[in-house]
Length: 418
Image (cartoon, rainbow, N blue to C red; front, side, top):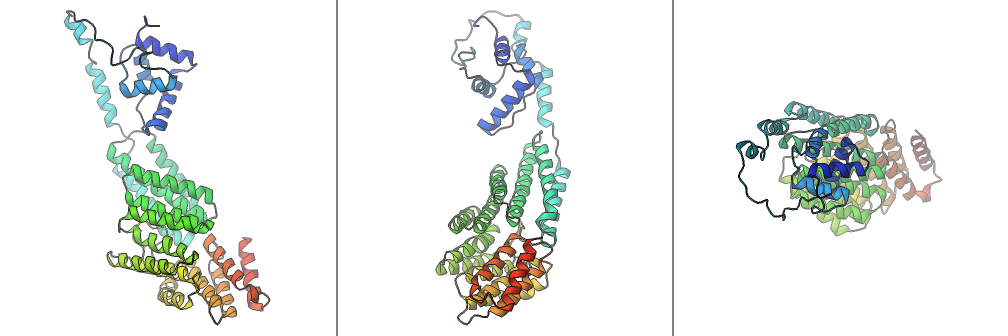
């Protein structure tokens, strides 16, 4: 085998493994992604040039070839430690043969500038994401999820091609946002395995895009998922880790109030909830928070109404009805003026549970609020509304025989069957 050229050895190894040139290309590209997290610009024509000794692969490709076939560079006689050939006089033609041809160099330069993406393409994807975020409060996950999946697949097809570095980084950011949106939607539809996978992908794409904001947002959605699975300690840990990436930026408010405070409330940590809520408000003072009710899946700043609503939820499970009413009263007029039916439902459910847990319980009023909450979002029920409604009814179990609680339980069953 040592008497053969490199190209011949490469061809023989490929044929011994029963691969076509295209199959070799596919396997080498897959290996580059698995081992190096890189997409390589190899094609069948390049392999043909290698096997005909027109070109030689660079060190990165040599290492990948050795890994693919399980051989060493010495086995392929490609070691950089080999002695250089003895010097001898050469004609001008033989010296020229040492270099790549100008046409090959021009071809390589052309490949560097090839791109399937431009500013117009990335702007269209950004517009699509803005539309999804804007529509979510009115339409919810079910009508939108197929569209988001299609957008994510389109971005992936773009990423499978070639782009200039700044466009590729932008596509990573867009892909990460779409994966994050799908993760959030999956939580609201009770599909926790999908939610976990999408959220982890969003976090990784945030790293590729060099966006700590996206990584912080993804941690918030992972915390959101853990909360509704009932793993409150993990929800706290994820929210706190997300704040390391947020660095007091826009996402830190959501992570402190929606992630950390609510989960600490489930764990009965009054001091922790107080501190997280106060921190969220201090952060809000450092930013120009939007008026009204920000979208729950926004990649921007959390509104103060969202922060207050999360605070109310956190204090519900601590059995502090006065604090629940303090924050609920702040947001009720804002939510009522918004188009977010789920927000209107959820604040009613927080008040309802607070009334049940109060020193002087008001089960009939609580049951009325549960019925109101379920009716408001009955056309498009989401997990959080259904789960909190069930928690209210379970908390009022000692009054389950009353007409008001019977009506609340029947309303919940009717909505769950839809």
